[in-house]
Amino acid sequence: MPHSFYKKLAEAPNVFTFKDYVIVPGKAEVEPSQVDINSSFTKNIRVSLPFVSSPMDTVTESEMAIALARMGGIGVIHRNMTVEEQVEQVRRVKRAESFIIRDVYTIQPESTVSQAIEVMNKYNISGLPVVEGDRLTGIVTKRDVSFADLNWRVCDVMTKKVVTAKPNVTVEEAKKIMHDHRIEKLPVIDDKGKLLGLITIKDVYSRERYSTATRDPEGRLRVAAAISPFDLQRAKALDKYVDVLVCDVAHFHNTNILNSTKKVANEVKADLVIGNIGTGQALKDSISIIDRVDGVRVGIGSGSTCMTSVITKAAAPTLFAVASTADAMEELGLEIPIIADGGIRNSGDALLALAAGASTVMMGMVFAGCRESPGNLIKIGGKYYKPLRGMGSLSARQKRFVIDRYASAAKGIAEGVEGYVPYRGDAQSVIEEFALGLRASLGYSGANSIKDLWSKARFGLVTNAGLEELKPHDIILPGE
Image 1 (cartoon, rainbow, N blue to C red):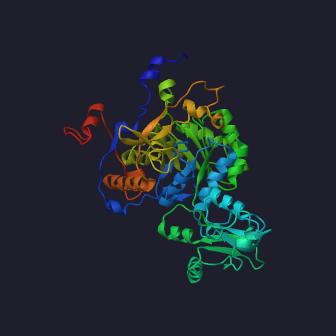
Image 2: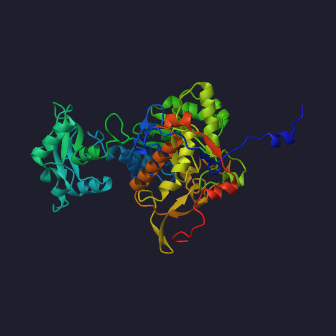
Image 3: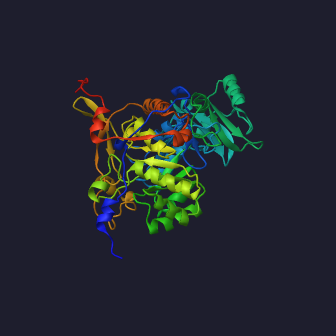
């Protein structure tokens, strides 16, 4: 039977975007400050705030991931670097805070003061337990080595009578020990003197200050890392430290990618997020092949630096992709968290994505302008900016560690752009602003939580003319 090309056009679905819709206000049962916006990043990981930073090399490295996790979200470390560099980025996040640091940097007593200083500077730490084998023999701090001869041995300057704690020490007990002895580092040892971990006063204070941080069972900040489904070596190396592995593919709905991801899923223990996908059918095909999926990243062509839809005319805008995937999820009877990725510029866009069935929103442009993002501040016309480039841009593609995503053999053209975004200040302020806006948005929708939003939100379609009326108008704004 011949295809009707006319019908294909006439019966094409509405591939809607964030600019097409608003949420119609509903009856509010609670005040915005009482709205609960905690959610799920994966099936096994909860977040206090539904915000995720994108795995772009101008957005997320350890500093951004630490800031996100402290505030209750989570960051995804980009993969445009060597395996060793990405592992180290993840380890920095896991070491940034913990009641007991298990992955402790140490030094030998026969090492030189110069070597001790080098280790402290490299990892930005202020002290090192001194061990012989795995047995604690002392501790050396920056204060001990500040004016020492660089050729002296560590055992000549270290503190030999070390105050220690047992593995079952509580937070309150550790605080009392450190206060009584006026120390900032408390090694944890077993009955035979084996070093098991380290407690620092900084981590104890951070734990109290960031009470809603996204933490693992050991009190460490959680972090995700991007991988290629074809790079099993990278996935295994990261799996030793990371909480979540995020497949970082522009178009995940591909037979080779699905089969490769199936192999990765069977080889790693960390939670696995697949994507990006754009349709419900893509979800169904993925689930039918991959044995374990803990999260789904959706949206194709909506990102601020993405040119895919311009060059290829292929796109699944994030709002459409979320709704399509969420419907398929319900049809399959599954509860896998959906991560809305691309095109989210403000808390209103985030509300629309969440109302359409997403559990969290992933943002690149928003976080690229923060102090914690990689890249230097640039002054243009008296204002400050930070760089932002798509991972499909020419400069990103030229780095050989991204070639498996935008392989020249398969894609000989750049699908991203690069430029600058206004400097926004520290990530904490940006996150707090988004959280306040999102709570207000849920208040208007009449929902008490994100899950409540899924059933209560009512969408309103906006015309292009109407869109202008919904912006500030007929007024001259400062700076214009």
